[in-house]
Image 1 (cartoon, rainbow, N blue to C red):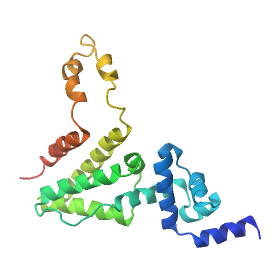
Image 2 (image 1 turned 120 degrees about the vertical axis):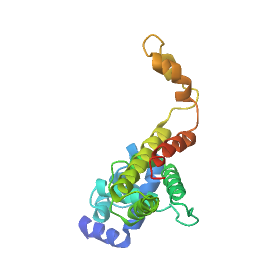
Image 3 (image 1 turned 90 degrees about the vertical axis):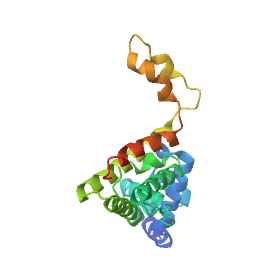
Image 4 (image 1 turned 30 degrees about the horizontal axis):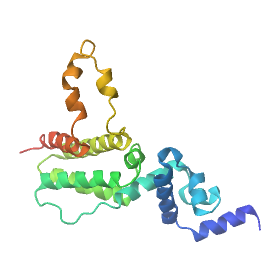
Length: 208
């Protein structure tokens, strides 16, 4: 039996879902920098071509992984008030990203037209439409919320350990006077509080 035939047999026994599950395990173990189709193949005990048979390219694998991250978002027990429903959906989105190592970095830059991603986007846009936004504002507000959540969560997952004083030491009053006045506020507060503050700022622009 040739190597190609072995690969085809392994590909037939695997499913795409199993490959993505393995990819998420590799992500947890190695982080995004250590993720590769070869690492996923090693995790599964198959040839790399077997993995590629299911996902075609690493970029496609990342899209499918990003969609799988959003699969954990629940849609039950959502608030009836549209603005509060949007707030809760945004929070669930952020928690889904935080549930995976480098989850925000993984999702950033992917544009999967896949069921879980589309379902979340549809529910979020619908909340803004129900809140009275027109179609353009609903779409752009959903875009703003998701990009804000991705950016802040990516910063959170890459943040240095507590006690890192590099910012305080770098900000001198004679060089960066405005930053020096506010440096305590730039460091204090949890990411949860920062997320709530930013989300409030976005939602405040919805129609009353």
